[in-house]
Image 1 (tube, one colour):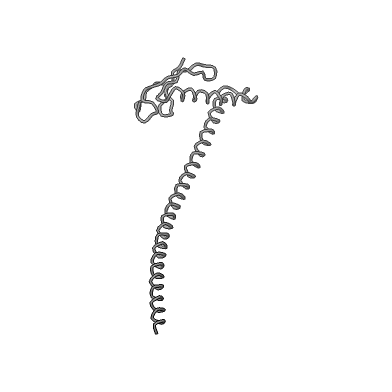
Image 2 (spheres, helix red, strand yellow):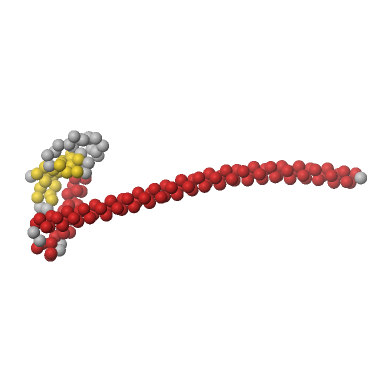
Length: 158
């Protein structure tokens, strides 16, 4: 049985990790016995046991996916390993591109929200100005009605 060590998403064979406990998911090392392609490995690292099991399950699913094709079964083991690695790298880069797209979408939406908030504030300021204008016009209208009433009263006195 081989022990492989994980630290911050990277695998080490010797278990040496100067960064232990610095920004990892767990502050204490966890280990999990997993079966990968029919062989038992002990995975150890600062990630959770569930994460280590998920890593092994992913590798097993990629191995099974590659072994489904007849052409793959007839290839030498080294070529099978390379194709497996290429498939995993392909998944990685596609996931990375998707993350980048989502990050761009988030940045775009945050910018849009920022602009909309400023538009709301500008409209609130405009509304407050218009409301003050209405109050001023109502006061002016009231004064004009008073002035009109005085003038009509003076006209009736003449």
